[in-house]
Image (cartoon, rainbow, N blue to C red):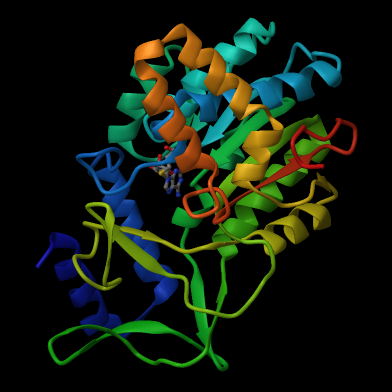
Length: 325
Ligand code: SAH
């Protein structure tokens, strides 16, 4: 039994069943605080860890938007849940070349990952939450951040809970599930309100669906494979698909402008991943095959190209970032 499972069982025995939201929140807080889960030796691999092209194109997208907004000097770079800092390092290389001199702010709770981020991006500042961000125009990226925030599951009119049955953790009910994500709505609303008040643009990238629909999308990932959700609490990554329609709705409600929701593959192609891959291969002929493989993994419909979606939220006073038309 994991130390967190012991604590959760004690809590259920004294308080009664706990919500899926409380369970997911407790598991992920423990999980991310105690390890670097990324890469071959960890549990999962994200787009920026597959290729530098991903962060570079995100950086180029933001650099172009910032330039068309008149290159405001006060703008800062913000990333939510930056992992190892790889995306930020790649994006900032492009932004710096474009003349962007703004500060870097990372919203990150994990001490282990903060360590990795400080090695990748010297001079960054860390914050525990979105509320602590300074008032400034933002160029923001959140890749695979929202999927890690806790969701609620509703069956009929009841909230789904985790209980103890037959000596193990179990869900208290089954049936058709509708998911909501108050923590995500809250994060997106806060970002949108800041963009409206101070200017800027945010790129939200994650796996999920462009239209809201019922269904159970809660999943656990361990050592690069799916695992039963209630196994090994705190030792595997719990995620849920992001409802991009709900994200767009929250952002619009806060007064922000929202682009169309596009599949990641399409977005990367529109931003010029093919040309970037050719240039990289020309500079590093020995890496030609690896670069082509990465491009396919990021873009092809049967890989990450379709499941992952991208949407931009921006100030109505700023131009829309490229790649969404
Ligand atoms: N964006 C990175 C990492 C994705 S993993 C990449 O693409 O590689 C999720 C990231 O979000 C990790 O950095 C994790 O520590 C962070 N995270 C998870 N929950 C968080 C929370 N509630 N507040 C701040 N950061 C959180």
